[in-house]
Length: 84
Image (tube, rainbow, N blue to C red; front, side):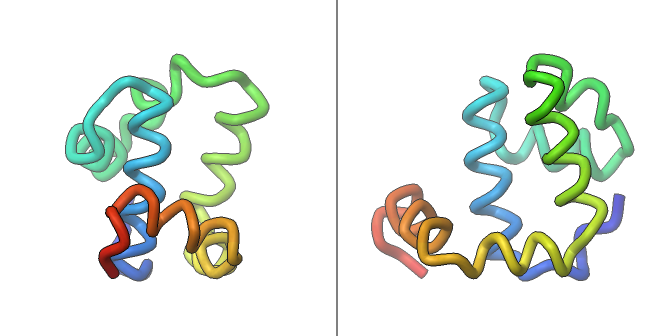
């Protein structure tokens, strides 16, 4: 999967959140996703969460829209310790 159409900060925030839910590092998750291993990355997710994640990962505009919400921005600030 090509993730170069997405803002890197937003992608990292998403990888941090999802990686935490999957008990895997963001780097490992990104590597698996880039190699097309969606099944491995989302095998521990609930079906509804996996479906939403797949939809977001296939649509960079949707990811940008989600990550631009105040809630996502606050989560990003918490995950990064206030860094931008």
